[in-house]
Image 1 (spheres, helix red, strand yellow):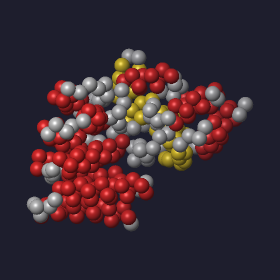
Image 2 (cartoon, helix red, strand yellow):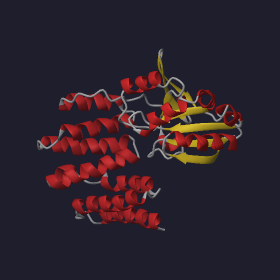
Image 3 (tube, one colour):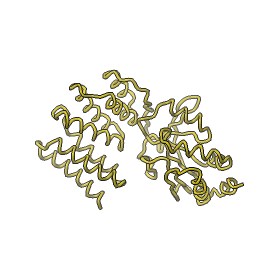
Image 4 (cartoon, rainbow, N blue to C red):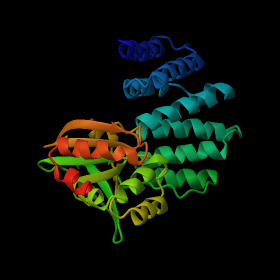
Length: 296
């Protein structure tokens, strides 16, 4: 399989660095960018695994020993990795590359913002604030608190403040909707669904709308969504990897479950003509009342 071959490529890169200290860092980075491009273009589900394996390879590179052009490419590669597999290691390696770029006077404000996003996605608020101060950056990106031992944790925003809770599928039919306030089609979906009062009431009762673990969310953006779409308030996934059923790189996507088992998935939003598909999928997972109610 193509994905297996690409994963093997990452392993070979790692082995090359381990046994050949003179391996060219630029070649490692260019190989990653080439292979990542192939995966992304084909929308291969192996991209997360490839990024995870490649992180181990690129973590061995020394930014201070690289030419500036190659260092900029390393930064680009590490930002891609941090976007797909957010966490401390990716964020700290991205920070090291950024600090070296800054030392050479080559760190842009856009690249600084990308480091802040990586720290926010990794729930490293203190790191984010230190980096902001060190490089004189201004940002209101939200770094949610870390979680220890909470399975399928969700961050919830209410008037009383932010909290974290564990999600468990209820018995019977249920829907998870993966979206983002900044995704053009997510608010369109919410607005179109809200126009059908009976269907909106059903989804309010039998669905949870979630934002993937991300580094580009602000508290204002989150609160504004919940205010503008009161029947479909959004929670935030603490860790994408806790939700293997969900494709967190595409929004909006509707996932229809029956007793916790995924039965059907609807990708994207084409407009109100999508509503019959929603009604049909709800009926498939045992929420048949939605179909009758929505068509009264």
